Image (tube, rainbow, N blue to C red):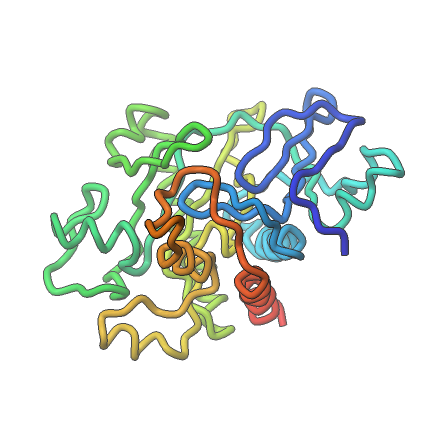
Length: 301
């Protein structure tokens, strides 16, 4: 398995490097998305790759795209990523790439929460609501919500934090008809996926979707979908105990790295969450890689 921190495809023009994905233009109408093994935490990219991560994210996303097609079209072209690079570049793309339609991206992160966690729990404690959605009294950390809620965020520039916004703001950005379609589609996908995952012993606490419009103005699901990078996955075992004690349930995402970073001291002081990130020790890299592998195996096994 080739480990790729930063891909280098010389035969295609580079469009953008995200936190994890490197996107290359293939003609005018397609994009080669390469999922690297980079890891970002607190919006800072770590210097060390997590071996296998890009392949796991790609496998999971493709597995989900396969099961959600009836709810919303997606950006896959069905063409092999290997077909658009040189023979020497094939090892960089095999197993970790998608050849997708070039869409007009919608500048809204479509976040759906089925449980109260992370920034949602913080906000609830202050206002009994999340992103302007009122919630009942008496919920605790990791509580299941009465029904899933749509809590969008505005996409930030690289290195900035995405910012939670109200539904009204989404209407201002994309118009009422599209805003409603994004909200309804996002909740429908989440509900379907949450049921599938639960049957495999996994809770999807929250997730974020990205959408684009094709040349006919059709809403298309794009980027990655329901990976541990874009979703909070909890194993069902351990959930009830965490809920009862008010703790965060154990999770299949980057929480392990976040916890280590929060506890790390640099020159006797906590890390200030700006680049450069502290060097990740081998044990943290291996445990994180194992978490990603376990999430994939549980879901698809």
